[in-house]
Image (tube, rainbow, N blue to C red; front, side):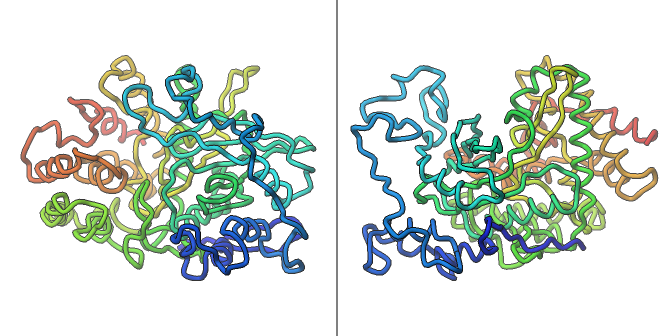
Length: 500
């Protein structure tokens, strides 16, 4: 079994520190920032919460200094009379979303409801201070910060330095706290992939877990990968067919390299290099148990927990019956190798917005330059790793793409299988994984392992899944993929396996 190294971060001319040391220094050994629970309280009576936090978070473990400054290090009490005081251009109180032009309504869904968090108001002076003091190398001062495209969960900034070097900042838009283990696991996974594969993953320079940090958000400063910050979702619709085929083949190679990483248990990588417990689902920071699991039934039970405090009692009432149906389903083929160890590494959100690309207009080529956002990554069965990328699946309302999507899916499966030697076990497992796609396991992932909020529809969705497991309800609900109402498996998959 592959064991990743313990992750450390090194600031120039300062000692190394791990994520856990960072956490203990700021929040105590138990990982709780208790002082933040008491509004207006002070840690030790020697200053305000803001002052204590500022000193703590600018000192960062220098063994030879008590603190970096002889005076108050930074004053961030911006005056409302200074129109340039807020680096990100904080809006006046009387300005509403409707007053802004369409191009400035960043972070909002157009329509009646706001479905995303509002844009961040970042403190650029504080960010530059951190960039100048705690990033590796000698690049001079941070002279400029520019905004890049955002995704659903993050905003991005490019930090420019005197010598022309730059690094990327990723700032969390979601105000929810992340548990320490989740931060460690994401960083440990990135370093592990960098060390054991050729997958381009950015190097992490600095991590801040505190959403109340003076910068204005939890954030990570990392390597700026080649290209101009474009992701696959930005360029996909503009690409020619041959470019899409090439990229799909490259993505298959990335999946193949993840399949080469073998583990004995299902869980998330930890700061000390072992496989630890599963860590919640997207948007929910919590541990699912105290240890990794070894079987699909344990894996399933970690997510379908009758004592889950984040689900209503009405929803949890269906869980015992769902687990009973899934146990019966798994017992039919209890020795299925696509569901058993060795387990593989699975990216927590391997979608087009997490794939960085670079276009060369001179050669009319496009290439993948980075895979980002490894939050919620885990080890798991080959069945779950072998999955069609979302952007080549069919969706109702996009019938014009059905024919090309089918060609791209065929190319993806063929490329992934051919990544492994002819006659190898893994090549056969790829074939089996796609042949045996089914609603029971696919919808288990979509409903319990990925989705986090269904509001008033949650109970109906969970009940519908149980009905489908029992063979009740609409036949269309018992299909492996739900993008189109009358989904049918690609017949080419089985026919072409004979040529592999």
